[in-house]
Length: 550
Image (cartoon, rainbow, N blue to C red; front, side, top):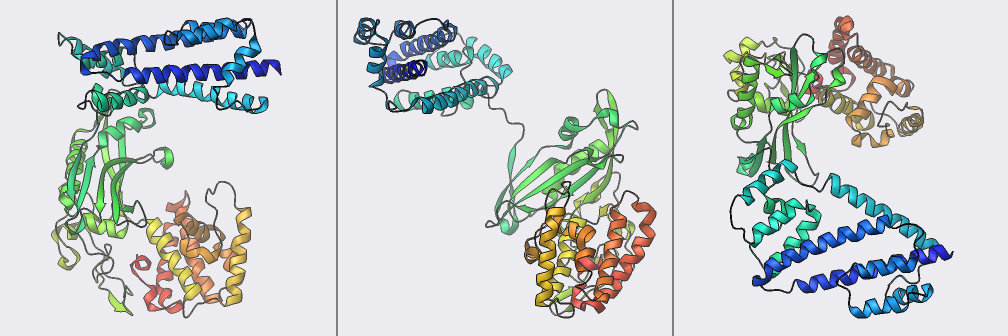
């Protein structure tokens, strides 16, 4: 109990002395411009004194009395008044009197021993964490510091600002300490000083540039290009690619940063495809556009990307003295993004199908594709044999060697199948005309989807919510329903025709999602064709949108 009381009083005394030292230091900043050099030297003295005090306090032997600790703190602090020193020396023989007198100045004198020990532990942890943060995170780039220090010292006669820079660089002052100092000096002495320590020391080095780019409706936007080579050099494991070939997948899509905002982010992403383990590599960003809607000028948006891609396709990439050949495996885009970069009609037009030349028609304000047309080819695409399908010349045509605009633009299952087709089926089951669950069946479906949540293995990171929230399902929830639990929960709810129709899609998708998909490709194709053929009969013609047609 007595030891805890002494530690508490010692802690309060040190806090009080530090507070007095800080207040006196602030008073010294009331100076004129002519005294600036003296202040710089005073800052150095206080900085060294602070280090010396901390070092002595850490090296004090545990056997020293509390009186000696207090006396040493006062003795090493030149800024304390003589009255304070006399007060400590006169009361040196009485521990309790000294600590009680100091405690009168503390705002936390009523803290109990238990509260103090907990608080002290937390504060000590924070001090060590702050020190570690200073050592590991807040220090500037050392190479940049050395270069800047050499430049300053070569300038000859140094002014006050140069002396301050040298002091900050030599003492390695963390930015969290230098930033407040710059603000004080800026407000009282030198208004031309920068607010940020990175600007002051010239250590802010940007790895990319941001340029203006027009978005939809001529709204201003921003664009930056990061590069393909930088991303590949940072992620490729050269030992995994014995054939010295890197096959790349590219993705372009728009995403809203906030639901309440019209501003969107349009990234160009790249991923290295490694066939033995496709999930070995994570995507990295090649370029970014941020603005209202999508970029207005596709050519400007893709210009740097195509330029670097053509260089890599021609010359390859050198990694660890090995020259790797670069190949494009595919482009992965949803329908609007694919229409944007290929300059073709969108999904709401009559000539929007990128796989065949079918002409759609309107059914109750919905564009439907009820028949199949002739398959499109890359040759036909480049020759513009169907001018109604194109809106212009795609900048991707300039990629050399040429890409296949039909087969290398793959179908995206997330938007097309899970968020598209499976969501449409849910809408028909809940609110449709021909296939609609009764109120009791909806309750039963909701109960089944609620109960199954606790039985979902931990490998599925997002658990499926009850069916009453189907409109808010994410793609992974739609995927889990279609590939796994759908047949079990729908077995005794849907009619035989609707259930068998659903099973065609379920079985085909399970086949194509397995590692042996190529062995079942023919059978899965026949099931999917039968599903599309029966869809207008099971539901209604408006059900067969472009998502179903694909």
